[in-house]
Image (cartoon, helix red, strand yellow):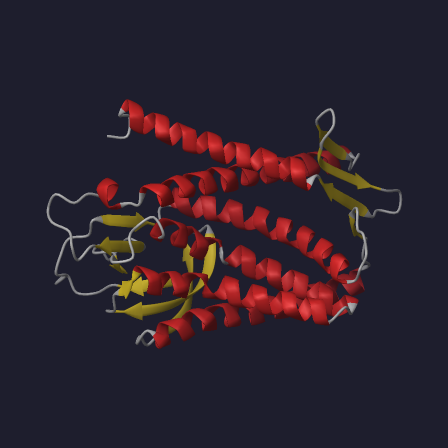
Length: 313
């Protein structure tokens, strides 16, 4: 995650747009991160099977005795620490490339979202520079992890890589979210810390703006529409994933441990626990993808309708 330290109030112009990390946004990040982690683990396991030339219909999670469980928890903690360091190092590397001197730390947003960060103070970035800073950990670590997974079919290393990629992907939610906001604006804009020291987020400045320039007139129409579709798609997937997790916990509490969500012909999700305690998962990728995309299109349509009726003015 990246953030800018506060700067003196002698800014040459007023921001034309702001992104504020509110409590609601933090909660949304948390939900998407949790659901995204499990989704990335699931698809990482399937991808590793593809690399090995295998067909994997279900993902099985065996019951582990206390000894192996503690070992894997320790390994997971170690991998988590390595991923966090590499993630922030990618941010810092690109910040340094653009002439900044990054500092690093950890924080807790609204007592909800723990995060590590790479911060700068005083510098303004162009839109494209900050986009590169934001997406670099997800792009570089994902590409490197997939290459290692393809080259190393060993099961133990594959488990570590799947976990590492899922951790990095979940930890990139905030970065990708901010990148999705930035990409709606033209490349000429510059990005700085919020004028208000007490608010986390960033402010967008347009060197060609005048006092009549507004957020709505500055945004790129096509990118705004694409952002709405992406937002609705991710939100639908997160809601579906949250509902599935809640149903699984309720099913386990009731003692069945089995749940299946399906239409007449399409499987959405199946979870079953056999007599030995092994849990098996199966996701209908096509059906879930279609459902999520439908949610994204509906959200975009609501945005267009709101603009047409003047509700957002």
